[in-house]
Image (tube, rainbow, N blue to C red; front, top):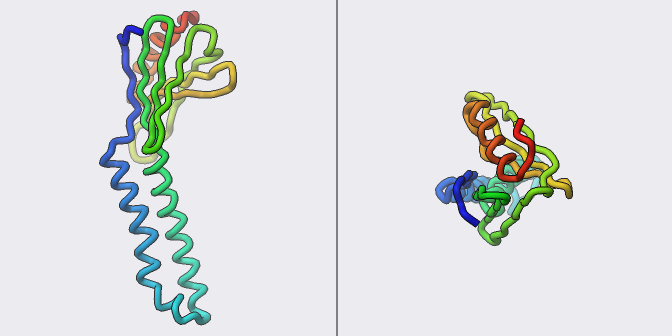
Length: 157
């Protein structure tokens, strides 16, 4: 397959390490700080237990994202889109060819802290959805959608 167009949706190693470190800190710090409340149980242990369980829930979520969060690399060629995904434990590839995709759509992601971003979502015949990384401008996402539709032989709108 001739690779003439790439779309990346990375989870950088530095971000993965930071998420893992914050997750571990959120799990270990309260357990260490409140250890006396658990080693010598009393009525106050319940209060510190609730705080610790809340911190563990947040820390566990961060660790889960660090471990199973995936990188994506899209290679768009003639009559095929190859989506390579990987996390810390696994790497897998999905190939989409003409006839596999039933719908494309522009998806807007709303952010509180910055301008909204726009991605392209592809829906396959089996119901799976693949979404490109967010672009800052809707026109950029529309150009990406046109290129993806062209590669799959779908009518370009």
